[in-house]
Length: 300
Ligand SMILES: [Mg+2]
Image (tube, rainbow, N blue to C red):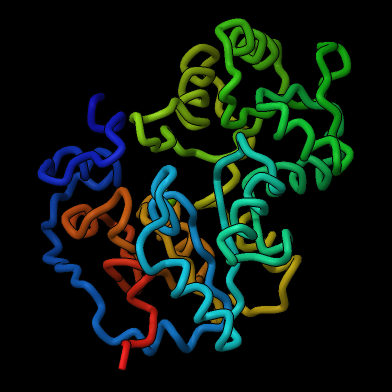
């Protein structure tokens, strides 16, 4: 399906939007999403949970005004927190980038789908895992006591991550383990990762491949929009869900996370989804902003 492979799909394509949102009752409900002009209800929140790609930056480019807006929020006593589904990178890679931008002084502000994986595996006492993931993901798992295990007899679970080092051989290994009865989990459902050159095959697409091959569903799909991401935030910070707001560019991960967990959400129009997509989606954000930069105080 070409729609799902376009990093900015469906701006003029209602069918594409319906495919992505899963809502085929095209705008029959009369919902007319509009950009929010009064940001004061958003600014009354205490914890601001930002997505990265399409929200803070787009590929290698920072979205204008966003760094200043987040710095201003922090200066006024708000807590920025970063939520990413990208399980191919390590926390230290993100921390280095954020620190350089002046957006983060403490790695605990970065909550990754990999954190939901390690929590799930530790909670379920599954410490020997075949991890289809990058070396960075395997290292993060190892730091919490999850060992990457190649010996089929010792493997208690299979993990599918955003594996940029994936090969047909690895996929076949995963398929055979799952076929043989090993439970498996998926780090996050994203079908593709946007990049400057176009889409990169992501975790959700690997999941589709394994499910098609084996006919078996994953035991858990973690990351956004699973409430596991909010539970990770709650382990680190004392905020109530009513004091949080999720800000992101995807209806089916960021906004859906808010809906699944009872947290208000902001759809920003700097990334993947558009107002037209929002009109067709059953996943309705609490607010819509052109950009996180709209949260900056107006210049005198
Ligand atoms: Mg995004």
